[in-house]
Length: 45
Image (cartoon, rainbow, N blue to C red; front, side, top):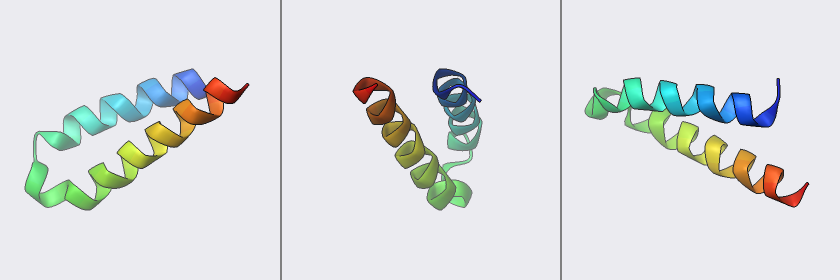
């Protein structure tokens, strides 16, 4: 999967999970980290 498509997918998932913040805090943190790492990777290309 292309990095930009994966970023969009993760952002959408994060948006959904953020609505139920307390239950999914660890998952949201991991998704934010994944998005940040993917953006860094695409910037370096």
